[in-house]
Amino acid sequence: MTGGADPDARARAAAAEGAYDAALVRRAQDGDAEGFDLLVRRHLSAAHAVARAVLGVREDAEDACQDAFVAALRHIEGCDPPEKFRAWFLTIVRNRSLDLRRRAQRRAAEPLADHDSVTAPNASPLRHAERAELRQRLGAAIERLTATQREVIVLHEVEGWTHPEIGAVLGIDAGTSRAHLFAARRALRRLLGVDDRGGRGRET
Amino acid sequence: MTGADDREMTRPDDGTPVDLAPLRAHSLDAACAPARWEQLVRRIDAAAAPELARRRNDALAAARTPGVVGVIARYATPMVAAAAAIAIAATALAVTAPSNASAGTLITDEVSVARALQVREPAATWLASDQGPSSGDIVSAVTGDGTP
Image 1 (spheres, each protein chain N blue to C red):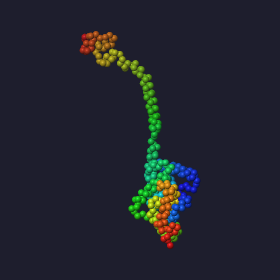
Image 2: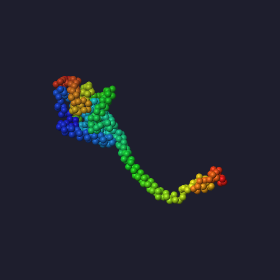
Image 3: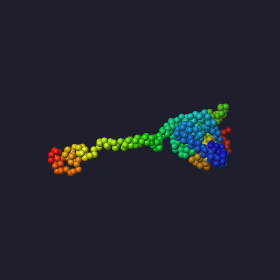
Image 4: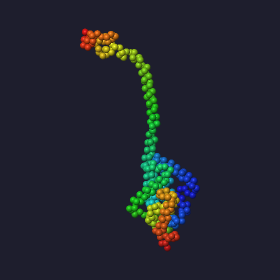
């Protein structure tokens, strides 16, 4: 995304991004596989971030992304104007993810679980186990937040999105996103047994 | 996404950040997990392939279907050719028609009309003359025998 530059430059960059998206949308409308593939590559990371913020589980987030891309292609004429593809598509991702989450609530999903080895390959077994346990605890704590708090904190703290970007996808303003982040951090500290000074109360 | 700037500018009441770094390993992007990323892209492309094929076919069919101008253009040449053929035929008929009429095929004189109507000879004779029939001619024409 764009960031750090002056507002005019950011607006120009956003317009150029939108125009490129629109061109790819038109190619996808005509069944151009390469155009669609480029669209996927441009927006997959953001889609995955949104899906994971809702679903927690990486594999489910990947399924949601696939589902959302195919659904978006089927209804791509509804993307109007095509320059706004990103916002339109991420809304589809979020809605699909929320549907999946509701359906998945019946089964015991492992929250933000580590199904692959994501620690450094040369990490010691002890370090690996510690990180896995920490991930487990964080994941379980995040699962206990409200849906919006969970989405805001994952998109902001894990994916590095700005509040305006989060607000655009969640349909809230940036200030509300900040408020949710504040509440989510406070709740997480409480759930993880971390005191207000940032220390971890339960650890020795 | 560039959340770093935003994170640095968070308001004091955002609260103390909780370190969620261990979860960042689960982010999906081409740089961090290229194999997994590529695999997912291919999966999505494969899932979308039938819909893309349908759209390609629709686009091709639409390209083959001409619009109103195309339809007119398609029939313009045969229509012009047909009009020219009709004009030539009509001209040919107009040129040859007077000679046909003079050949005597048309029945125009009164005697021929009387014969065509199978009127008997005496009646045909007074029909051919410019004089009115006598009472005997009328009786002869009505009764059909040649005598008054």
